[in-house]
Image (cartoon, rainbow, N blue to C red):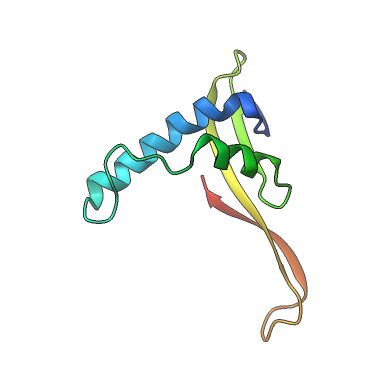
Length: 94
């Protein structure tokens, strides 16, 4: 298995896994989450994959099939009331 930045050809695999997560959310809270909905359009995913401030990492097998992902966001706090000036990588969706 290899873990690397996700690329455009990973979009179908990302959609497949995102759909599975969405269905778990729907089953647990059908009052909040629609059945069969997509979290992102292809265009939204392409934009995210090109945004260095929102890196997406993909775990892929030897055939390039996406087995897992981590959607991340760089966050920087400067002049915060309680935090030091720090830049962190926040894992948004795993």
